[in-house]
Image 1 (tube, one colour):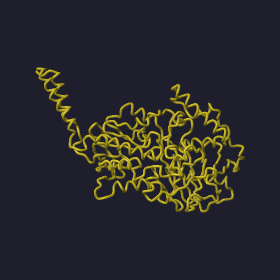
Image 2 (cartoon, one colour):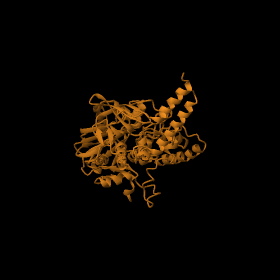
Image 3 (cartoon, rainbow, N blue to C red):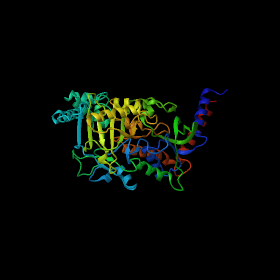
Image 4 (cartoon, rainbow, N blue to C red):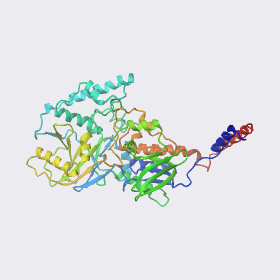
Length: 514
């Protein structure tokens, strides 16, 4: 009679002597998403010698949230609009500009932040004395100093930017106060101070404004490092350019399947099989490794089923992230009846109600008679949930208050709503109040042969386009390092010898069990 110890010995020997693998593989690596992170990952894999790559993209195009609309003869962004951190004195230091230089350049401009005129809900221009800019700046400095105290006492968790501002003397009272706060906080983050984490937002974690500047520019607080893209081919031309290099050429095996919506990822230490709906049919694709670059909004929503479930620690990290709601509403008119300032503010009675109009008629060379209205947070969610005609009616009513003698009629329009899009479920990640600085790196730690990527995994650059670029490259680098020991020969000789030794040893031990 064979005893239990003997059975255990044989089971362990079999597990060491063989490993489960895909019965067939469609690629060496599957990448989910053809945005900046996914295409960058594919490019880095190819540089490292892995060419058999399959990219599954849910939409019908590359670029992800880098997308433009042709309005008034100009290509106007519906997603990210700026290259953040581009030093005008030395733009070649920025990784995105390095790509742009190889891809024919990228037209744009630095916005003149002083070129701003404001109107209130009565159509009047408030006096300059009503704007408490200095009070807000002082409170921001106080909040920044408060971070050091909280970090030292390890009491950062769950502390919001709202708490930091209030504790430092800033409480908005008037509609003008609310507008200043929106412009300074909600606008760049896509979410109100109540939702933002103080210690990450004010804790020197964001490196985008410091890492790509020349020594002569560092320390210049007045330097504008936000380069607004107005290229005729759109911001997405950078991803398209990389993609053409990745998928082009006679010897390239990399391919993209469009309109492939991923529903299931079955992963292990040896194989990853991805199920996607393509042309209405569920199709399974298998590979040794997979790099999902979908947004954390999609991961949080559970739109992709992981089998087995991701570890609890990974799910906890995902749930601490949150996506901003940042919507462009781009409109063309018959003529430019508005002010010649680059930015036109609207100070509503309620915070964030169509608060900023970007005047593209003077900033785009095409002079397209286009205004770009930006809304965030709860207002953006309301806009996402209502008919487009309702939104246009609301904006036309506001413009009529501001310019009562003008013919305010929208001829054409486009709305960049990423919140309602199931492929994204939000615009970009912001520094939510439950996030910890270690979460970004740990989100990108592999589980089995699964390497979660995307801009949220980029330490110091999360939420930015260049963060997505870095994240894609970093995920690919991890796969290349994993493959490095076995790349030269069909098998890893040292590993095989070690396994064989263990099998022989187990056989000897099992013999003693009789």
